[in-house]
Structures are given as structure tokens and as C-alpha cells.
Amino acid sequence: MTSAGAVTRILLRKNLLKNGRVAALPNTGFVKFYSAAPTYENIKINVVGSKKNVGLIQLNRPKALNALCMPLFIELGKAVKDFDADGTISAIIITGNEKVFAAGADIKDMQNQTYSSLQRAGTLKGWDEVSNCGKPVIAAINGIALGAGCELAMLCDIIYAGEKAQFGQPEINIGTIPGAGGTQRLPRYVGKSKAMEIVLTGNFFSAQEAEKMGLVARVFPVEKLLEETIKLAERIGTHSPLIVKLAKQAVNQAYETNLAAGLLYEKSIFYGTFATNDRKEGMTAFVEKRAPRFKND
Image (cartoon, rainbow, N blue to C red; front, side, top):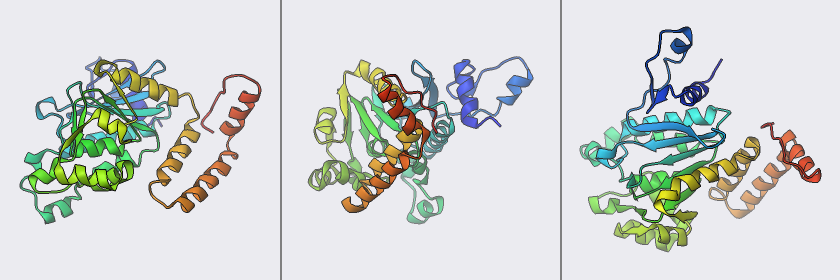
């Protein structure tokens, strides 16, 4: 049976899915099969790259500066999950537009929330789909990435930024604290002292500062950002999807355990790659001086 992710991908390739909606078509059996493709109100999805193997998710609440409301995150989680399940997708990019990635959480949605209402709703649990994604997730940040926007970027595996991008955790200014990883991931990426400065002042910092402190991998001119991010995703896509997933797990382990446990985990995964056909193919291709033909096996 065809997966929802594969259905979405076919629709995108045939230009039948626009901004998350299926285009109107003659009533054929083929079209009826695809009528259940996801409808999105707060994001746009596409498949990009020269081999059409990169899933692109664009936050799309321009009037609200892409503020992260609950419906947006439900849609984002579904799109990530579908791309993760699609065997033809190698990597996923999350981006905004040239002026804004995400200005933070939607304060109007949160203003009248209470402790009990947040507990009952399990607020922020939708973020798990991004952090649990087995495939590489890359954030392409232009403009502002503040509060929950900065936290969403940190959920991703790699952050590329436009030269005018700005980051920050300004929750302290409105009487609360970061709640989606800002106080936990920042110290791991930039160190305790810098994280304390960012969280306790609410000050913004530039893309160049973010790169210097290790939060951002690379900075590009605004107009080149998405192009370079797609190139990165395509480069990752030349490798074995199976081994890429294992490598991602191994790197993430470094942030979740001590060094001794991490090294033990790495060694176990390394040994495990020798049980795969893709490891055999990669080394054989190297010896034979040819390009490898990985089969995700």
C-alpha cells in the first residue's frame, strides 16, 4: 500500500499539490486515490533538488510573522513524519521566508493559558516529531528566529543562516522562560555562560555571532541561503540513508550521555555498519575506484 508520504511526493512531482492542497482535476479513479493528501493552512510543502529527494517545509503565517501556534506545529509534525516515512526523501529542510523564520510562539494563543490547561493539552508535545525524525532535518534561517522560533531551529540537526538573521530567547521579557528546549539545548551548543546571558537578558544575537558560538554551521547571503541549504541536503542524499540515520543517532548520543557511554555507543554502531550491504558496497566501490550504489540495506 502506498504511504501518505509517497502519495504527497507524487502529487508534488505532478504539480497536483499546491500549498498543501490537491488541485481540482477530472473525476478519475487515480485522483480519487489521492484525495486524502494533507491539507495545510499554516505551512507549505514541496519536493526540491535536482533529484527531487529533498523535502521542503516552509512556515507560512506571514501576517503573524510565522508565530508558532498549535495548529502550525501539528501540521509541521505531520509533514515531517510523512517525509520521514517517504523512502525517496533523503533530508528535510524547514524554512520561513527572506524576512522571518519564526518570531516565536503565538502570544495571543498563550496569553490566557493556565498551568492546568497546558498540562491537560500536553502543550509542546508536537515538537517531538521534529526531534525524533530519523532523517537529517536542516533549518534555513533568514530574518528573525526568536523564542520558539530559535528553539525550533535548535531541534534541527544543522542550522544554516542568512547573513541578516537574528536569534534570541526573549521569553524573560514577558514573564516566562523558554519551554521548548531553550534552557536545555543552548548550554549544550554555546556553553553555560553564553546561554545564561542569552536567556537572562533576552537580547538578540546575529547570525555571525551564532556561527562564532557554534549554534549555526554556516552563514550565507540572504538570496543564496536556500540554494546552499538544498545543496547540503543533496550532498547528504548521496550517501546511504541507513548509514546517515545511524550517524545522526551517534552524534545525538554525544548530547545525551557522558563521554564514556557515548564512545561505547559509537563503537557499537560502527560495528553494526559491518552487518549492512551498504557498508560493503561503499568499501568495495572505494577499492574499485567507482561511485557507490547504495540501496539503503
